[in-house]
Length: 339
Image (cartoon, rainbow, N blue to C red; front, side):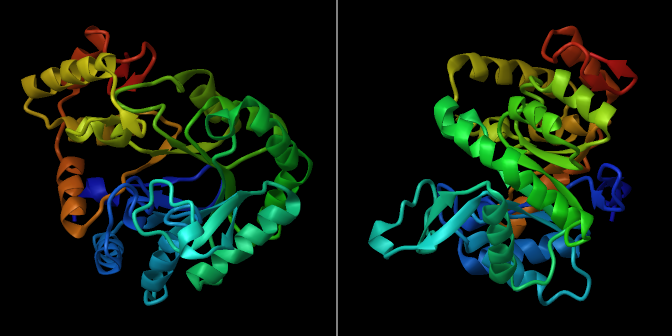
């Protein structure tokens, strides 16, 4: 196995060290397109076999399906990876015809209810342990709090729940050693700045917002993470597929402006004979706050393709060329300096 795959980075000030490449559990639960249980389990097992030691899941993913699948594989392992799941959504059983499937192809028969209160966080954590069939989770993220999911008016009472009780629950779980790290898992960096006002966090899972295509979180968010000793896991490194030849950008059809920028970035990659997805995977790790990149392969074969991109040697000149052509946000860390 190559040194690139084996590299580990510490999460914040904890004793957790994760491989810089992780495995995301959303796609395996059948977002947009179905994935069989056998294929999902095989993908998880393959990731562990090749040395990935960090797996992320959540109650939302397939409305419980992802946690069940992850637990089925991990329970058979003598050495378990570092595992994260999320709190803030409670799952309530529903007749199959009444399930709000959302983007999930074959979800379990539950609907989700948002609850970021003290009791809601504790209940969500206990429910996840039961779905996983495990005695522990290492990292707990507050899932999808913020205006992107709930809107301005809808988020205010939910944030009040987190502020008046939910954060206390997370601190209690961490301080008592039940979990080792706490954070938020969201699609917008602005709410993470609000989170810093609540207290101390170990790690944030940020989907998009610091990718080869967009570096909107560079400042003040990532700079504040360095000041506060918090690490960042970058989910969605391909921006929903646009950086691997798809047409989706952040879960919707990509606008022409985004498509044009992707073409420009790809042109530079071609000049250096580097596949665009390889550059997309490796770019976030140049920032010192980033500890892990978390793609979501659908199969062992897709994971092998990701590993090929992961091990691609990228000359420093590619990053310099992207910076010189204005395709990276000024200040973005690259080998030898900043853009």
